[in-house]
Image 1 (cartoon, one colour):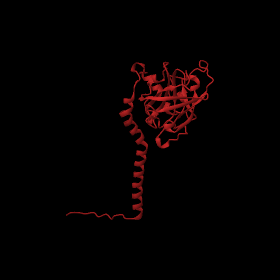
Image 2 (image 1 turned 180 degrees about the horizontal axis):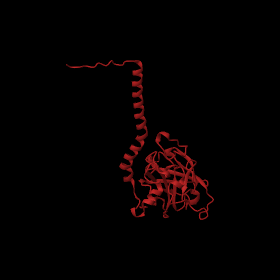
Image 3 (image 1 turned 120 degrees about the horizontal axis):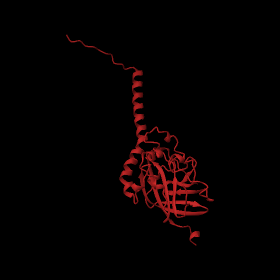
Image 4 (image 1 turned 180 degrees about the vertical axis):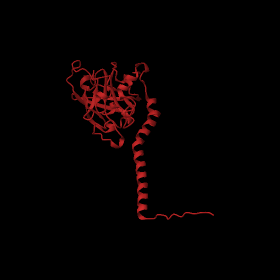
Length: 252
């Protein structure tokens, strides 16, 4: 003889409220996850399709730091909870094996200048020569030459998720650096003189490839560096630019 069990359906208002609230939380959580991870995923796809093709002078493999110790010194390790990831607003944590210059060996009256990128709505951002705190300015790292001189001026800037971008906040100022392209202009003002640099190439490197910090003295170069994908410290975006012409007063 078949036996049947009957359950009374709960159609109470409380049951409906709980069910709808759970559905709303699920949808909101999915939207937040998409909101957070979309910039990272889209950057990875974009960089693989375009950045490597734009590289004119890739970092030579023989010049990269290949040991595990050198690689770990840059990011602490590839473990997300590494102690070296605690505060990347401090320049000393970016390249521990490449410390800032010895102030006694490099003397210059110029301690800071300004950088502008009209395409990114960055207007006269302060660059501190040999600085440390990326929350207060951009930093001219390992200075051996100044803008307009022969050599490679390397400038670090912080970035974050595009949703948090503020062109006037140094913690987010380089967020849209990946949107630059060869031919775009970067302007530097120093000692009442204006220097114009033109972007020549862009590429992404692993953090241990410290050869991007090296000097070249055949022309005046500018290198902008930030962390990518947006909101992470996994890799480095390198934007290379070259001085197009000297200020008129210097030419004369």
